[in-house]
Length: 159
Image 1 (cartoon, rainbow, N blue to C red):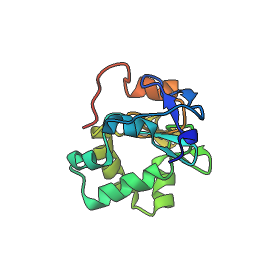
Image 2: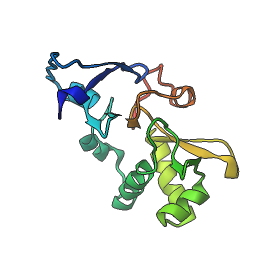
Image 3: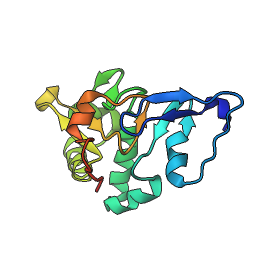
């Protein structure tokens, strides 16, 4: 990874504080620091509280893990809302997009909500889902609504 592509993000807001200059060096000594500085396609991927290996503790089935990663694939840069073609997706839209039975998807999403990975916001067809920015975020800001839904000011653990 080229150091010119690295930046420093604030842990509280997720906002980019500054990018590294050409003559500046960065020493990454812990896994947590490495996660905070990881970058993919000029977007900052932040895994604050857990790493991919810690997902084991969610006690999800293979199908539920698959659902999780299909949902994360629908998370656009700069937003914590799962979207399809730029529109916040409700469960019916998601069911059709990722080819999972509506009821089965509902069960998977309830388990993910129990693990504090996603949260439903709204009612019925007007509902949509947020991904916990403490779990994964693409971009350099955390929305106020995500901050509020996941109580990011407090110690609200994932699973």
